[in-house]
Image (cartoon, rainbow, N blue to C red; front, top):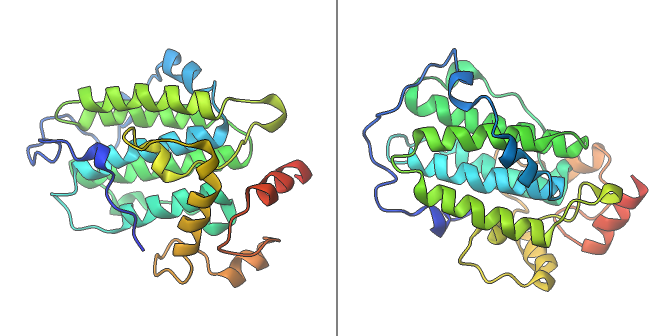
Amino acid sequence: MTLPIPSYVRIEGIRNPEIRFRWDDWDVEAVDMPVDEALQARLAAMSQRAVAAFTIGASEWLIHRFSGLTSELLPRQYLEAAWAQLCDFHYSTHFDVDTDQWRGPVRGPMGTAIRRVKFALRQADVEGNPEWSACRLSKLIEHVLPDATPYLDWRDRIIDRFVALYPFKKDDSLGDPVPWQFADPAHVVRPDDAEALLDEFIRGLEGSQNPFMNPPEVMVAQGFKRTPYRFSLAEDRQARWEW
């Protein structure tokens, strides 16, 4: 199973093969720094899982932008595994991106986006600061898109949605997992549907050939105490309470 390309990124002209932006593999900070403090504050108003979900959903814009210029499948496979990690971090092992394999004006931004998603998930896992990585990714997306207007509209709508659905709570900073469908503005969100959507998604990944997914025996060996490739919101909340 590989998740479909979201409808919200299927914008006319987004896959323009012309590269009209500046790119330096050795100076990415010139593009994505400093972070937008106002955006960082908006993201901080939602749970850390919601920030990570925003980061994954945002990266879809960048990955799709370059999809006509590369046949590389790993970015989409990684995003699928990232959504699984939102259900539980044991579903995929944190890994390092080999920057030597991701250079140039096409692969460079794609590799950077993967690293930003990876870092956001890791920060959510340790109750850190995933907003910082999300903000850097957002600036990168604006830099590489032929027209950033549709992305910025999506960004505002999804931030408002996630803040309303998953507000930050000091006693539960991680928060509930976010279904991938909720990152699509066209999806009619019913909060009570979240558990079923998450369970359907994670069940569909059982036996997956995705190289980033962990098999059940690896998850159990790493300390996973529930039934692999099944999702229960009550069990997830209990695990957060015990943690």
